[in-house]
Amino acid sequence: MRFAVSPEELASLAAAMRRSADEMDTMRHHQGPIHGKAADGGHPVFRAAVDDFAARWMWGIEVLQGDVDVLADLLAKVAEAYARLESEIAQTWPTAGAGVRR
Image (cartoon, rainbow, N blue to C red):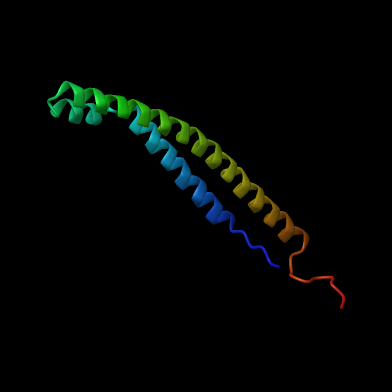
């Protein structure tokens, strides 16, 4: 079995996850449009329902953001470790199969 890892792709995925976490953080801290739409609905019960939903939704987003932050950090560390390991291997064995006897 062969296992191939691209440190560049891992780093790119970590960066994408970091951007997602940042977007979630922005959404949590700028809820004005959501509350504005609720207020535009006109009815106090509707407004209260949307405000309650938004508060619960933002709590869920906050929980997800925390998980995505952790995953992004760990994935970035994995990418660095793979890149470092590949560099060390390349320095130790500059040509594939060098010193292997059959």
